[in-house]
Image (cartoon, rainbow, N blue to C red; front, side):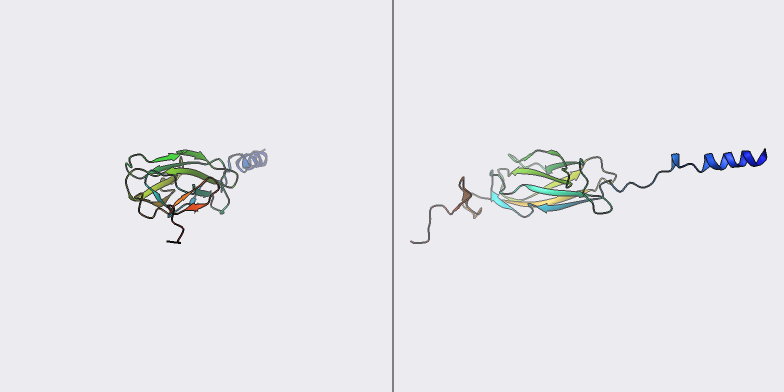
Length: 154
């Protein structure tokens, strides 16, 4: 009888029902894919969206993670759309940015919402230029660049 009790205790105690293995699908890295370092005229849209990728501890993409984009500090007239994005199957999230009315360098932070580490973020740096100060020119509907009407044959 004593052997049976020990055997039952061992079977119950060794069952895998309460065993929890680490889950590598949790976000541990947020990396910038593209969009950093852009310049545009104050008040204009940046030419490219800001794109980040969320990765787990095995460097696999994390789909369905929520990423929040926002300017660091108060930047009058600036906007990020959308401000909250869910990552796609590749773990990527992107947002379109309209620069504010103030010229100069601005920081935009992307951070994973609800991550175990509150520091899971990435910082983009963009520059708002004055309208005459080399914002890189405007593009027409076909993506052709214009330099203010000068064709170099003066």
